[in-house]
Length: 342
Image (cartoon, rainbow, N blue to C red; front, side):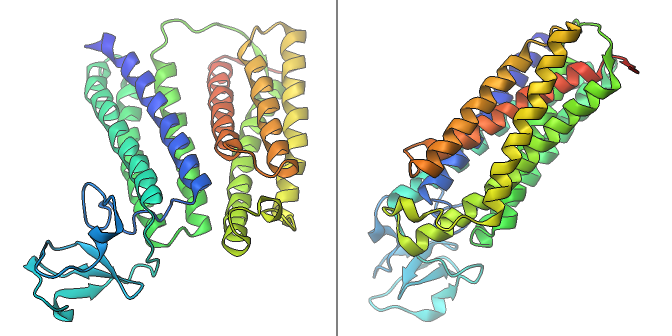
């Protein structure tokens, strides 16, 4: 059974990245409220494909939890019933978690696919935890962190509900994104624990500290970028989806901090690459860090100076998640080894 464990961990990591990609597409298309409730969508397991499905209809069998839009407000069925020829208010309750009452079939299905990917990712993670029990005697950490992954995924699912119920409150979106990165980090650690051989090297305390600082910088950049993205979302509501040149006009203070931090990120990681070559550590993954930083900077430039070309927004986020993944795995390799003072 153990031979299937590592492939399951890799599959889980790939699916976490797919969740991040799906979430980025949801943000790019403004589909976050495509489903007003959670975990169902307008009360259905399979979401509606046309607006008539969520409009009140006479002589129709409604189930408890079904949602309709009536007079630009959400109404939720209080019980199972069959409607009569006229609308009966006693069968319905106002949906009070938020007041977003719009239907866009594309937004609904984009959000639904996002949720579907999240649910599907739970299957290999659950199987991974079951197989991790075979490691309990020899490598207890594997079982423990596989269990923590299950808890983190459940917490992330609950956060998804909270984000929808809050009508996409910016702080909760940021937390939701950072938790996805934490889950990714846990899975990478589990993957690292399954390695048969770990290269033995001695790294200076300075190198380890700067490497840790670079990972923290990436997380700060992601948090700042999420806040900038929320400002863009608000601008879109004001100026419209076609006025892309106005989405960052005027830029916020957070945007300038986000942009300035990118310079620090480049300098810090350039030093790590230089020191790695100087000391001949052989950390080849650092070259990928530089490539990802360059691509991320490029997508940032495209968004600001060329009015948000198609897919530039989700690519920017996906690149940052890949950057974090590579940096974190390098950190695991480095911190496993003994530190020396220089």
